[in-house]
Each structure stands twice: as C-alpha cells, then as structure tokens.
Length: 186
Ligand SMILES: O=P(O)(O)OC[C@H]1O[C@H](OP(=O)(O)OP(=O)(O)O)[C@H](O)[C@@H]1O
Ligand SMILES: Nc1nc2[nH]cnc2c(=O)[nH]1
Image 1: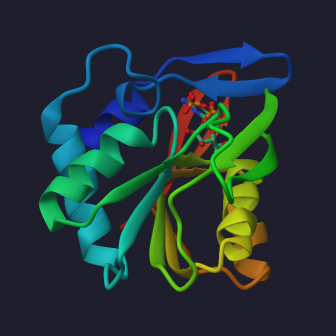
Image 2: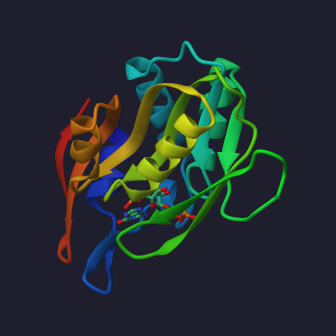
C-alpha cells in the first residue's frame, strides 16, 4: 500500500547538516520530482489511521503543504498553514521552532477557539516543530485530535506521545550517514 513511498525512502540520499544526517526525498524536499502516486499513498495512509472528524487540517510550511493540500482535496476539509513569517494580524500566535539543523519562529493565524484540528506534517524528527505548533494550537484554544507525520525519524514522536499527544506516522525510519533504513510502517 505504501510501496512507492517505502521504496523511494530506502533509496533516499543522506547529507550531513553538521552532525545531523538529513535524508532528501521528493515528499519532504520537493526534489527530485514528486511522483503523484507517492502523494496518493501518503493521503490514503493518513485517511486510514487519522481522526478526521475535524474542522481544519493544520500544516507547517513549507513541506507539509503538498501532503496537507492533497489530503484537504480528498476529504474536503480546509487547511491552515503555519507560516515562518509574520502577518501581525490580531491574535497572531508566535512560537519558537527548533529542528536538528535550524531555528526560527512560527506564526499561527486562522485558528478559532474550539476548532477541532488535525496537525499533518511530512516529517517528525526531534519533535521541535510539532511541539511548538501543538503548544500554539493549545494557546489558540483548538481541540487537537491527532498529529500525523508521513515519516517518523528519531525520538520526537516518542517524546510527544509521552507528553500525552496522539502522534501517528505512516513510516518509521532510521537515518545515518550511510542511508535510510525502514524500521516500521502501517
Ligand atoms: O521534528 P523536527 O526536528 O522539528 O523536524 C520536522 C520539521 O522539519 C521539516 O521542516 P523544515 O523546518 O526543514 O522546513 P521546510 O518544510 O520549510 O523544509 C519538516 O517539514 C518538519 O516541519
Ligand atoms: N527532508 C528532511 N526533512 C527533515 N525534517 C527533519 N529532519 C529531516 C530530514 O532528515 N530530511
């Protein structure tokens, strides 16, 4: 069911960002070209495991957008994109984001108190991005049903599960300088 996604992850090149082994894949980087079948596999997988009884799909720019958009089209639920630049709208929520290789700020607009949401992203690794986003969604008064990442790498998902969040993923991988190894998948 996730055949093309898994095969392409197994063949993904890895580069070092300092000490951080970073895999490069069409769904998570936009390069090389993204096969629509891979997006379809990811969307079908999310629909299979996620609680989609929600008002809004929330995703984080940039590489959450392709999969969240395809999911939105499939289930007719609108998306809100967490941005990396300010709009200075009333009630904008600003949080610090840290990944294994970058630091920045996230800006959340468009979430109303009581909105039932699912957070969708292409990857979870350290969990820094997801945690910052989940905290901001809580501050906005959203009811967070699920967080689904297409690819789970590292310990971030485990940390968030231990904090009580519903974290799901389609494929779990281990990444080293030598390449990507598939550990588990739905
Ligand atoms: O669990 P973490 O360690 O926080 O890593 C996960 C985040 O890293 C990637 O985004 P990135 O910040 O690289 O931005 P991009 O989507 O614009 O490439 C990915 O899209 C996740 O949002
Ligand atoms: N493409 C990609 N995105 C990431 N986000 C967090 N870690 C990674 C990674 O290793 N590769």
